[in-house]
Image (cartoon, rainbow, N blue to C red):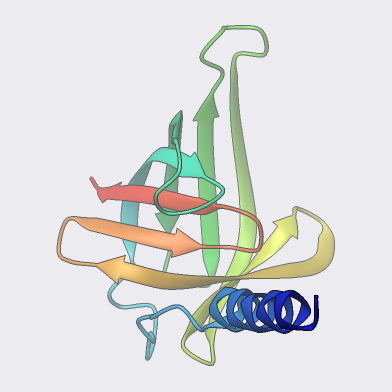
Length: 131
């Protein structure tokens, strides 16, 4: 019984350590590498889990404005066009959570090349393609 308890504690410590391990991120010095239009192709709760397709465009503008255009895939609500503030802080994107509310979420770049980017925000990963 004592040995089983020790193994259980060891396994718990191992999983707690691996869950808290930091994910590799790409630090942004400024917004120059993300400026322009990006198509959000999918979102997922984890990088390697099933992805939900999206039809959203984000345009990062020079003045710290992020324009979001989305179309409802089921044509219930039509389209949405909103602007929120964003900035680059500590190598991450801090974007306004909702327009008009000064609450921000942090999104870190986990993968990026000239044509694709993956952002990890608080609850979701966003898979993006440069337009």
